[in-house]
Structures are given as C-alpha cells and as structure tokens.
Image (cartoon, rainbow, N blue to C red; front, side, top):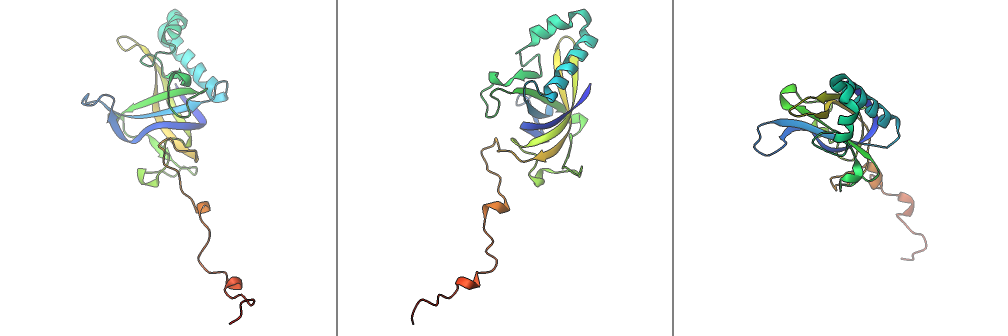
Length: 190
C-alpha cells in the first residue's frame, strides 16, 4: 500500500548508492529511515496502512501477529525510536524502508519536483523530506511488515546527523566593498 509522509526527518539515507545489508551478502539495497512524531497525521497514516496490509495478508491472525512483531526490528518496519540509541530518535517513531538495487534508485527531487543528484548535497541525514513508501506484509519464511522506498522530496534543512554543519551565506558578512565612511578618521592629526 503506497502512502505519503509529509515533512519527516530523514535518517540513515543510502539513497544514491545501494549497499549490502551484511557485507558480502550480494543483496545491495537502498535504505532510509524516517522519524515520525507519535500521534501525528503521519503516524496515523502508517499505523492504518500496517493494519490494513496485515489484515489483507494474515486475515484473522493479523492482530496476534502484529502484537508479536511489535518491537522486533526483523519483523516490523515501524519501531519505537526509544529502542535505538541514535541522535534524534528519542520520543519518536522510526519507519525503516528499503529498495532492492535491481528495482532502481528511488526518485529524489527538490521542492519544485526537479530531480536531485548526490552532488546536490541534499537530502541528507537530519534534513526534512516528504516521502512515498510502500507498506506491505510478507509471509513465511520472512514473515513481517516491511516498507519499501519509492521516492523522496527535499523539504527543508535540519541539523545534520552526520556531525557536519550545513554552511550558508548567513554565516558570513558581505565584504565585497569596504565601507568608505570609516576609511578616514578626521579626528586623527597628521
């Protein structure tokens, strides 16, 4: 079930180059996690989608399986951020999504829907994005609720999780022309 998340914080983005989950597993994938405020509209949309796909896939067993999956990262894509010791996760929910390399890189764009590339420097870990994801249920042997990355739209800057501050013009003063009014001081005798 495809859903859209609005203005969520991006974490652990491997959106430009697919990486292996375990080194040498031969299964490269794109990855991203989205931090969600509990009780927000985004939270409600995710929970409703999870419930719906669980009922469609598991029928009468949906509620008991969802209870069993709760808090288990290998079974549930949507977890309490307090279970993780990462910056920004405290008191948040975290939706983790993946996309197989063979399915192609996710669509990534700016606020005007212009495609972005890695050299644009955004999106990055800590910024805010709109995101589309597919929520789906898997049956045995890898039973669980998963999320697939579809696309991301850069919305706004945020404090980088990578430890690197974002620079900007506001960090500096305009020094293109000296202030001529202070070039000579009439009170200094020669």
